[in-house]
Image (cartoon, rainbow, N blue to C red):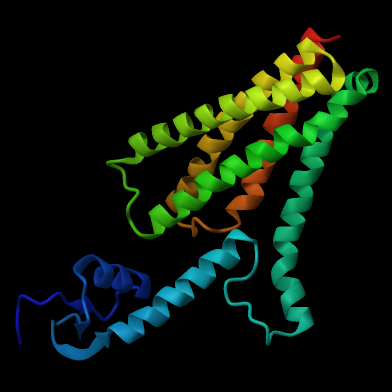
Amino acid sequence: MDDGDVTVSLSDDQEEVALQFQRYNLISAPVIDESERLVGVVTIDDVVDVIREEAEEDMNLMAGVGSSESLSDTVIRTSKARFIWLFVNLITAILASVVIGMYDATIEQMVSLAILMPIVASMGGNAGTQTMTVAVRAIATRELTAYNMARVISREVLVGGINGFLFAIIVGFVAYFWFGSVGLGVVIFVAMILNMVIAAFAGIAIPLTLDKLGADPALASSVFLTTVTDVVGFIAFLSLATKFLL
């Protein structure tokens, strides 16, 4: 037995074993028990299966689908597995609707706000999803740690700010030429930047929070992210419009 080999403990999580194979470019590794006795071996074909399973699980969790769901599941079982996250999504959608209802008088006076609102929310959601996808992968592969967390968060927020500024210019001009209002163009310009910056921060903060709480960081993060981007986007856009356009 070569003491220099990388060993795998019998109690190690399969995802951790896969990370060791990736880190040390292993083809096989001995498995030892608590007494450091050889009890088996893990080979690369086993790890490939684990990587595929973990990727499928993360994809399902990010969409709010049960991690073990398959096409062979019954209709009742599939419905039960999906119901909880659809219910959570309903609650968050109601919350966004409540925010819109707070500014119903503003929307009644400026119908153009109702037309432009989805743009602000949608762009924030897409920007946050990009950050969230990178964050979930980085957490899963242990690339995102306490040592580089501040730098990564700053980087993502800066990226969100740059993209927010560029797209805010485009949307601001579109709003101006569409409705002939300079003020409306400025309001959506500011709201777009605010929402995309906060979306970028939320996109990495939500997976990190779930990970700190001991939950899978891919656990329906998109549901929570959509809530943040919708609520922040609507509040920013409609409150600015109420203050400066009416």
